[in-house]
Image: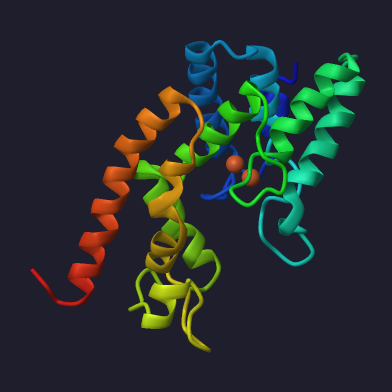
Length: 211
Ligand SMILES: [Fe+2]
Ligand SMILES: [Fe+2]
């Protein structure tokens, strides 16, 4: 089993979106969910520590589009070096390959559903707000821009329309809680999502000069 100290070296320390503090939060929530739903704790723990280990930080040539594949490959090599049994290595790899909102592979095991839920719970709630804003700023986008009618109806903005943190909320984040799999994950998701929605709706009101 990779240790927390070993895992720390695979992640940037100072990235507010995909740094190691995200991994530690995902690990803590995933361990709790695993216990609540009776998932295999060892597989969940290894998957949480490794899930964003390769290619998750945006930047030139980082291959962010397939960081779930790169991280699964990395996990296979680390766990093989540790002498894990091939079936358990593949169980961890499946969790990692299926952890993204837009992963082609759906989470089909309890362990993969736990990792998916724990990772998505970190885009909801207070850290969800903080990370969404940090991500927008990293990408050179504003915190708020008025979404066009086109964006509101189709999710595709007009040419040159910024993709602000508020756009990301409208397009994706406000619906994430409905996509969670486990019962305790969905329960926590509803609470965190309520805070996220309240924050972004208030942000929009203030931006429009409404009280
Ligand atoms: Fe990820
Ligand atoms: Fe993640």
